[in-house]
Length: 260
Length: 371
Image (cartoon, rainbow over all chains, first blue to last red; front, side, top):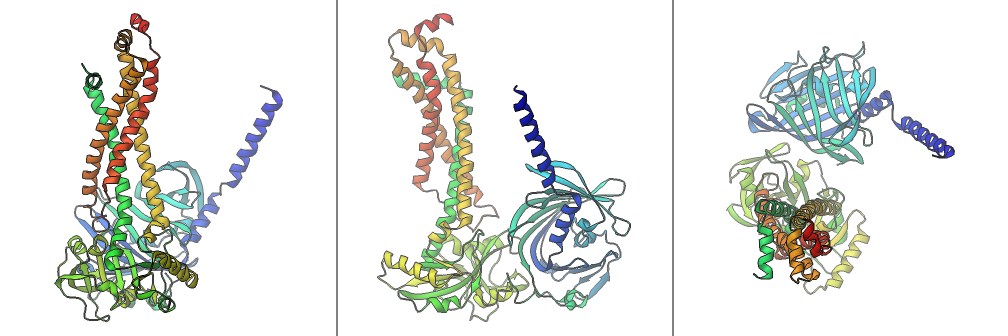
């Protein structure tokens, strides 16, 4: 081969590789972007939850949430089936402090959540899973790249720092870097055992940004999985502080007069 | 022995291989029938629903979602005074997961509007007025939800009594949960919003006047677009994507069929080299050999096509009974689609046979001597 042509090809290849490496976000950048997407203010979500275990159960839920950089407050409420209607969970995490929460079971039973590893409304998710933002943990790193359903994903590994409180030893997230959407999440114990796996099965555009709409969760329980099917999300809804109190768990009314 | 007998003998020489090739084509054609039939059914189901309601024009904002975006209900007041507008009915329609179902049409309708009038009570009654917190169910919706009059239905945060079961005359209507507009607006937090206006024009309005009215409304109401009933679904981005995907997937399946037939026919030509050479030696023209190969592959396509149409029809009938689709659409398996599918299969057969036929036409009687 002509040596000038060879030098040209090598130079072009090196230039391209360098640019490609430059354009890939770092672990901290990726985590910061995903964390910012999670801390998207006040929103209202309606979803169907199918718990597939020894017995199959379908729940219709509403989620009221207020997620900011400093605090996360979420309320999960069961709307269906009739016999479970009104069951509610309040979870709150302020800064780096441990999350706290309460559950409400109609007509009048209020219980303080002692163990955040308990299942959320009987599903394969734990209380901790819905309130924890591991993208905000101190230690973030890229653990490689892998295809998930034909999409090349970057694997982000998040580990809690000294100030972070979590029962997990680490969390790996397979992220589609083009859409900035997690397509798979695996949560590990300190010894490296997979405790929970969450797969994204449908991504939809929400206000111009892709978000996971359907998730399948596998926990430690054998032959059990939970499917989450998001049907509606409303952003920038108005909540008061009262909406995130134990007293408010008794009220199933959704936010009023807010944009779709 | 006739020319046709030679062709059929050629196909039955290797029955397993011929059978598998036919199955390959049949699966491809079944995919065409099923996917295109369902995507067309989506359009025709809505068009029939509109026709049954007596709607001439639809004012909505069909973006990339399956349901139109909400806009202020005050838009109705701007449209009503326009010439040729006889009646309007404001709606808020959504696809929702209701109780254990994946997706169901929930339709909040302006009380007293003409879209209530095509609903015929099968059991129970209509709501007394717009303020009554109750629903009526289309008969398919009632079956899917396993509800009867007197039961309750959990819709968003409220448990509403089912006061009636209705026949709306179209699958879209029969698969719907129907309630008064203000009630659905309240339940979904869409107070003062609608996303569809059904419009009836005065009798005698020509098609040209209808198009002019569409333009007038679209200019007057930037939040939405007026389209002749039935066309609004066809024009939606979501439907265009569904249609493109169904044809794309079908063509892939057909391509697999092409390769299968081509492989079979090539093998046939290779295996029957001596026979073809003998036919040439006894006076068959090359064009006749080419016709024989093309007819064999066309025959494969025809049988595969007929089989594919039958599999497609059965598959679609089963598919529409699945909980995810039931009550949402009726497949459009019109004769034109079915004949087109068989036609595609025959064309696929002929096309796949072109290269093997060309190979066979290159043979000479002397090839027989080489074994």
